[in-house]
Length: 254
Image (cartoon, rainbow, N blue to C red; front, side, top):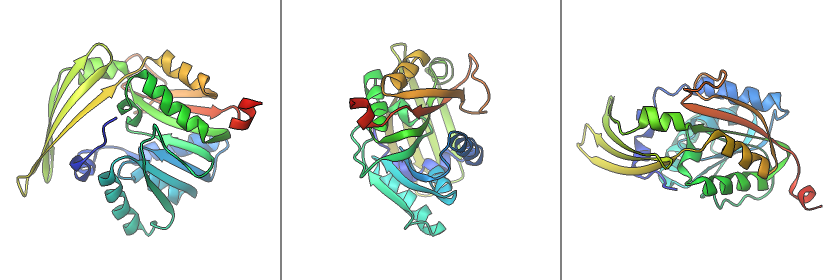
């Protein structure tokens, strides 16, 4: 699972069209609908922290987890500006091997973090890690880019994304085995500095995602379109899942 390096400093500039308010409203609504109106919440792959900070402001005790020190540096700057530095715990960890100090009431993971984990075996390991620290009745909300998006939208396409102070030249290579390789070249326009990032996203069949959740003690409550938060369609480009933990680790071994 690759971590964002220097690209972290440009991430927000190229993610400016993301509707964080709509995402927060959906996530917060799902948490409350499933009985989690507060308590300890982990954001797995928190990135630069926009959603994490919104959840903190909503009253959750938030842990932000990301394996990119650069992403967490940007996060800290935002938390400082909002006066939330003392309210959010940041951990530089890989979610495949994360270590927490106790159990959590909820976990969220958005903007395709789980697509970057690796093949389906790695995906299942990440679900197992989330399950291990989850209280009974805890809620796990996460999204995934769909196989449809990988094949029909990302595919072998090339993009140029313009921002006020930077340009991203993005080239994809789709493999029918279940992943897309992405080559990003980011140019800082004022300085002319060029940054290169190589990423790989995996996609997983919906039934395999459901099976992994079931295997590690989650009841899948809801799957929605991850962009408009309505019903899933054949051409949905992102899914967002709501799952609830059936048992504690102690109960599992009884």
